[in-house]
Image: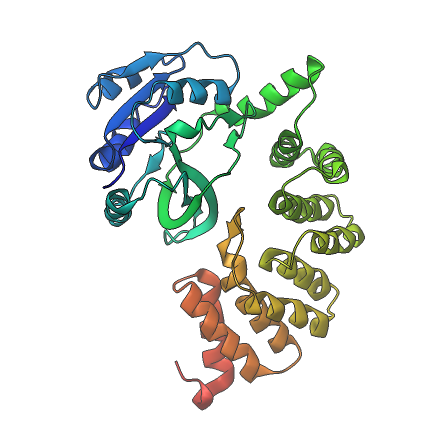
Length: 363
């Protein structure tokens, strides 16, 4: 009983992080396959310290092509992928080993949590769910040249195991890499898939090209072929585009559009709370921030963790204080302190309540 795992990675110029990644996972897999797409540093030498299965692949501006090649070299029951700047923490490796031992052959795909951004205290603030172990006999393939993915189908096990993405500062040439590939495709007359439309719009947002970002988010949403989680995320980022352009009245329309796709998400509720707070309509703002706290996380897309506890509590603290309800404000301050102890805004509020509450302050 138990499963065997082929770790299949694609790398380029990852000498600073590759050993850290492979050291963290080497005890949890049965085979390591490294496909190099054109390194000019010591990446391949480092890879060979962990495996003799190091291969070259000519880079063709297509991550899926490279990943599919790495998968084609696997020989074990399941294929697993990691990026070079990923880390499997020891406690997560223990969970992985336990699952590896108990996994039955009926399971065809295993998802794991993916922490990709952290606050100053190391708490994950951005988490997604990704396909991570894929049964080789099913012939799963990667799709899209950038932000590549595997269509999740078959008998799926959603695990709570987490992979940590610990990316160092990104080199300047990589900041523009993705958007350059998208724009090369467009210049060649190639049509972007719905998923690529969504991610191109996100790249445009990250490059502060807000009008163009709005255009592509609307193309994506109006096409009606996007994954519902991406549809909701598109509405969220669209609202941020309008805020950046000072078109705040349009944020209300796009945020409520997200309700077409599923029940409310906490980040959407909080954006609605901000909208009304800025207008000093505190009763409406309180409604949306409080609603965010009643929701249950269920998303398989990106989860912005602070919007589910810290942000609504600290904003409710401010809103209740603004209408003179010091006791309710203080209650939410205490909850925000539990969610993010040591945060500068929490510390500021702590000093404030010590002053205004006097003997009623509980500490």
